[in-house]
Image (tube, rainbow, N blue to C red; front, side, top):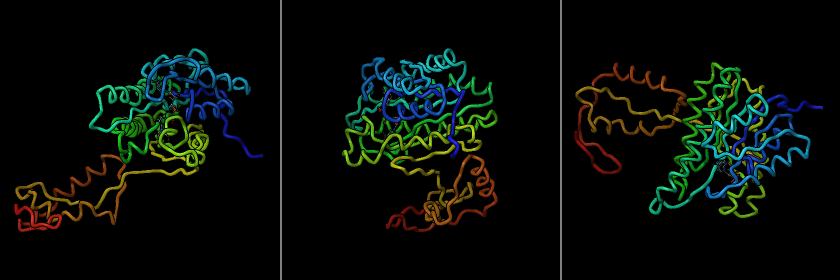
Length: 320
Ligand code: NAI
């Protein structure tokens, strides 16, 4: 028989685990031997109300199957209390999955401050507070696995979701930096952009599509990233859903490199404009160090080309 990936003796905290993707993660990790903290505030998908029923149901299901789990009903902005539930019940935390989320979809024109603020509160502050509370434990034991949740809406934009897009892309930058800061302590941090049937997507996708987007199908990627056998995958962005899993990364065009001297003008840029969007020989930057090399090169360039009439988007544009 093949060997299962197991998490015996480990504690996994899953935020927003009362339903949807979080529930699938919690059930999986418990089935594979982990102690699981099932956090859920129990409110509506728009972030209204609350209650203990959502988390309790998942804990009951896990226990009925012989697994170990405890419920926590705190709002993710009280991250300290969520992590303390892990420490008090199981004495440790090994994995944090920042998964809790809400939606407040509305066109930018009609957006109210409350729609913006609530989304930032749950997705940005909540993920920060939970990670911040787990971090000292991760560092001290020189082990931690953090998985946060972004979205296609954040990566690409999505009509009516500018609040959610802004909040979700924050999780990419957050993860990239924590991956760098955590590396020395064996704290590996990754971010996923899932797509799955849940109460969140039920309102926007037809049933036949949702049938092929089971939340359980996101679990294998999260399982691999969260496991001790993952010794090097960190700072990565993944899209995952419907059985598809792929990394995403930044791509840099060839660019226009100019010397920042007296001839550093809009016209000088227009002369080299084609390079700005020339992706024929792309680079894949992973840090600001690549950029420093470009600065050095620019200083060695000859003076910029002299000003003359230049075509820009089909029109004769600036001269200098
Ligand atoms: P869901 O609504 O089924 O699950 C989210 C859970 O988080 C709910 O049980 C909710 O009660 C809980 N929650 C909300 N605010 C909370 C708070 N302040 N504190 C504690 N718990 C809270 O939604 P789903 O689809 O499972 O979403 C999970 C994550 O995946 C979210 O971060 C979402 O933004 C993200 N996502 C989901 C996609 C999808 O296709 N389902 C697409 C892209 C991202």
